[in-house]
Length: 173
Image (cartoon, rainbow, N blue to C red; front, side, top):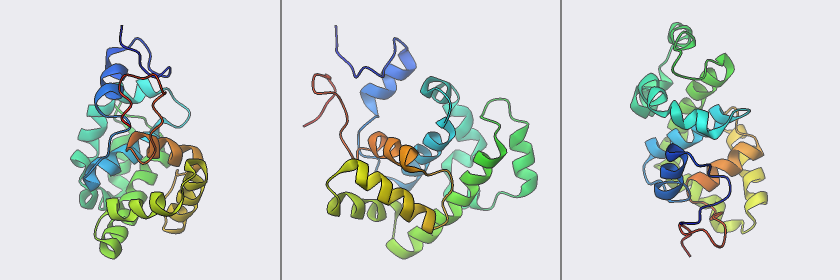
């Protein structure tokens, strides 16, 4: 039997996500933006719910095209509120659009989202402090639904911090 982190249930979707994606570096801005969006959508819900709806999110949010999402209108938000395949929480949907706009500004300033995010792990060795600082900095840049818990979960998901349990077969040293 392969040992996985305890948060992974006996659920093939969660296991596949854990084994192939979670904690590994996400190299494109679209992948990073997707991870951030899924984390903010997960707030208050189970991770398995989000993973089951993942493809629906991708389709609803323009295949994670940040520039396209930034152009979503209030009419598009109303359409998304009717989409039973995603989490229909108006403030979260609006946050995704706001975050896309803020991401475009980061890209303009830093070249890409990955470069911007790297600055946080280089100078702050404590992951919890980094998450708090990242949350504050993202909020200063206009991001929404990026509190410390969401920021920390995002950091775990995209490999900014290695939180696989010591005995996890998928932990990379």
